[in-house]
Length: 184
Image (cartoon, rainbow, N blue to C red; front, side, top):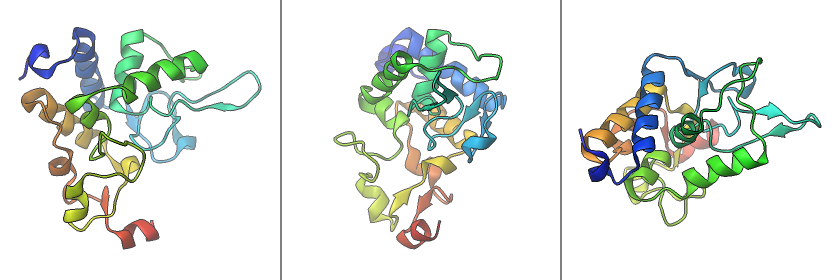
């Protein structure tokens, strides 16, 4: 296993990543495909909002955009935020920005762990690594990434310094051809 120095991350990042990994292995974070099914601690790399989606005082949904992902959960753990009586972690604008800024400003291989197969130059959806296209795929469907796949990517990162998402996702329904994407 790589050291925090070899990974180029801070101690809190390392500790939080191990906790996220442990929660995924123990299934204390459940995988959801539909935000309406989210209760308590959920894990979904594609949906932006659950499990930390909470209604604000006006009844509007507060959407973080990152707390369902590995990096978002790392920041939630580092901040020691806890679920409310409904089982959700309330996010106000300040918390949303803190989490989103942390995840979006990650660099190098940590960024690659947070944004599977997405170019660091522009991590807007659809700017996939060349190897996605070169292997006949068109789209990477984050919402279909399972906790087991996330654990495998975390393990790769901790052991080698690279998440190696392509290897983790190969043969799964996460990598989609253009036809599969259009029909999904």
